[in-house]
Image (cartoon, rainbow, N blue to C red; front, side, top):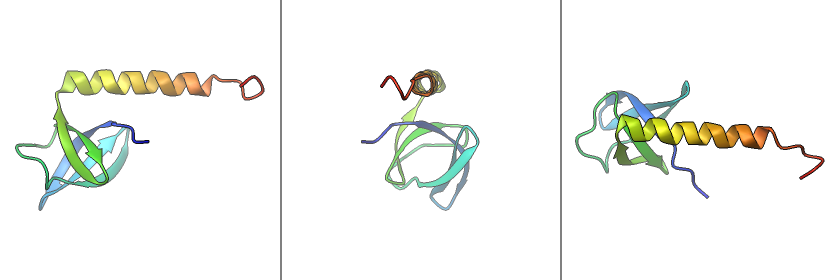
Length: 80
């Protein structure tokens, strides 16, 4: 299974982006993307940015993922 987590581009060098999700940074290839800039949000799969998102869609996706993670944290392991 793969989660499509919006990642913000914080740096671009030679076709590679440094992406950030809540302070965790990784590298991603921009080989499959056109017209992306620092500050854009992208979806990354297998190390490649594959889709650009607008800021509102990225914020909503991140909000929903945080909400889901909080629900998992609240599950009592003795009842599940």
